[in-house]
Image (cartoon, rainbow, N blue to C red; front, side, top):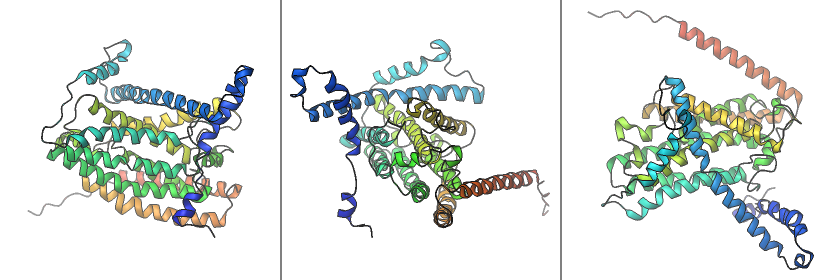
Length: 413
């Protein structure tokens, strides 16, 4: 029987896998290129630390550029969807407008509310920023392109992303503004609520793969598109959509952007922020968009594995990025298409629908795993057939419902 006590659990956590690649790099690449007189005097441990610090510096330098690209992409998407020119005049095709906005925020006055809590006010954006980028450490971008491959990767991601709630509450409370406080409480309630169906959806994947390691989850989907976990069972198919919609609510994107409802609470928990601290919130938002899309690709859409096995190059990085950006584009599509929900609709969707369906998915996944083996061809075939019939039935039901004429209203006069 497994030891589920706290000591036994933490003893089974393997954190050393995250440093093996640095040690191998030092022994296989750096040491053979050293002069013969220096080989015996070069400490491998020091080289490992220096390699990890260098890679961390590259990671910290490159990842913040990602939100800038996504901001520019969203400007283009919104212009196409709503037929507006938008910022298309600064630079070629408006590509320098985002850079101009960054320079503007960099030189804006850094205002701090005089009656607020200065320490918490200054710390809040950095906590949100650091938590958002710490998630990337456990995301496998390719077969060997990952920062740390420890065996509780998805557990680490869920834990570190939950810290964002602390930063949101700190920002709202320390601003000494009723608008910021209302936005922070609304955001905290939304994030905490949607973390439940999101975590339960992840649990269906963990039950099938029997591992919390992100790389092992991807390895279980390495035999073609029909072995992706979204097609492994009808319950994981439903879990993917619950995970993706809950992720949109987690990152406060439309139609779930209640913490930033300008018609009600001005701009939410960051109303009193300006300058670069204001920019950090939006950099973290776009980083979270890419992160949750990358996690969805890893868990349900094969990760770095391509549609056809054996045709991946660069460790599968291009295919992973294309699939991730596809989900990011879907988030942008929804933002510029759907109206914002009310608070009661937001909570009803989570507590009355997503959570019960998620528990049903867990029960169904357990039964499905008892009936079929993990790589059984019959399991994948029956699953795809059920998904196909379900989609056709849902499409027919939706078309019939939309085509139904409303009944005439009889006046009581």
